[in-house]
Image (cartoon, rainbow, N blue to C red; front, side, top):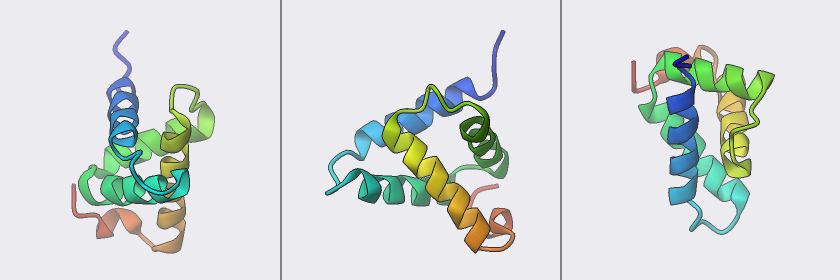
Amino acid sequence: MNDPVTPLIRMVNQISLNNRHHDSDEASAEQIAGHLKKFWARDMKRRIIDYADHDGSELDPVSRLAVARLKTMSDVVKDWEETSDAG
């Protein structure tokens, strides 16, 4: 079975790995969430947030923080999907 969220999990975990140079996990998560908001398509963001809400077991800890921050951004900015730079 080819689960459409699997590549997203790999991508966000790789982005997290590449952003470990920040002062803290929270700072890294903030940068990652900003990246996801700006560059990921709406459907990708919806799927990774849904995955984190219902399972999230394959997300590394910084990725989990980043997705939670992305979700917070969506709550703070009304209609966040329409403010995204990507699709």
